[in-house]
Length: 64
Image 1 (cartoon, rainbow, N blue to C red):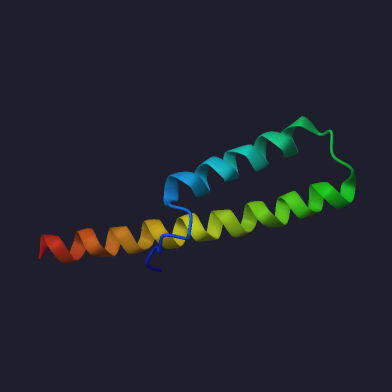
Image 2: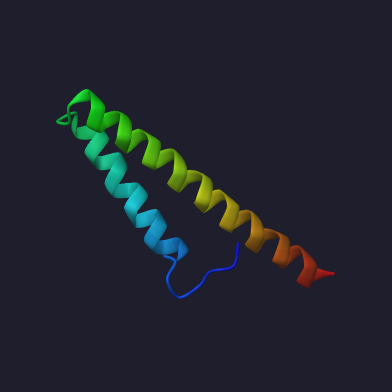
């Protein structure tokens, strides 16, 4: 997944994920909001993993 200027970079995604986790850990959100945060956290986790996997494949290619 190539990054475009409009898309957040890995560090921004990770920062948002950390914010989501902190909010969930606080336990202050109503159930519906907590579920939305959890869903967003899953999306962010998948996006981060996809980007890391792509970079890992690139490193492997460069090592050949």
